[in-house]
Image 1 (spheres, chains in turn cyan, orange):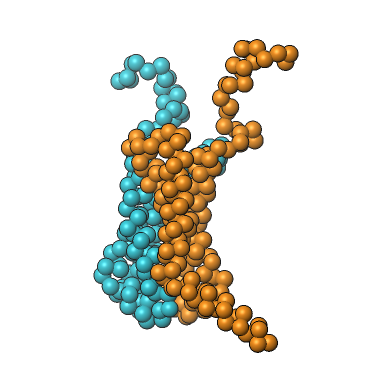
Image 2 (image 1 turned 90 degrees about the vertical axis):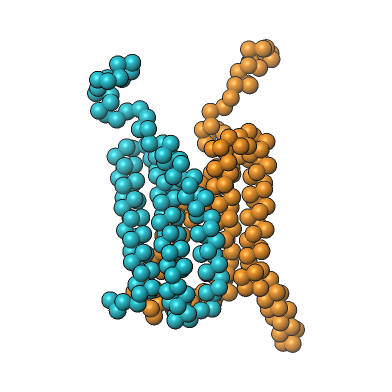
Length: 132
Length: 153
């Protein structure tokens, strides 16, 4: 073992007890997405308000604009990343059973990944109008 | 139990463990748990919105159906609540970023910035409501005509 100063046994290390050392990265990513969400959510609010009485053709025309495509994809990635981190903390705080907790966190992240990819594909479908 | 000795006073002044059943939540704790609940609500509503978007893209007739649903007079209240929760959550998020930078980490600042967030999110919600659809004037017009119709009857 490299670190002889620790009193943690190899078994304790293998069981993954103690700090995971992922907390700071988690918090930094959460704060960065908090800030990046502000302009992206502002754009979504503006879009929803301006598309209030839009027909489907107007809706697709708006979503086909290059700016709309880029910002919408950024919105999906940024918000889903933010809420994945947010919900992970909620699960870690309130679910004491480790097995259930890990299943919930992993399931939630897989769900968000699938949802995000499906949304991005849908954004691209509107943008390029492929008759799938 | 007999008299108020220094020892008893010491016992009383000891901090209380923040256990939900025995702890009367102070303002900052209420704001904290409200922010978390807002986050959970927004996560769920974001998922619902994305599912709606995907469904509309792959099944265009659904668009007109959901737009008819949005014409319901009560649907605007859903959007107003949604807007308030979004602004509240974003304000809380900015507070968290500032706290991580070491700004305003004490009880008084927490109460002050919490009040600022509540005030700003209320103002922004009403401002957005007014800008987006002129619902204030529309609302009052409807109220007046409805009263007029009732009077005629």
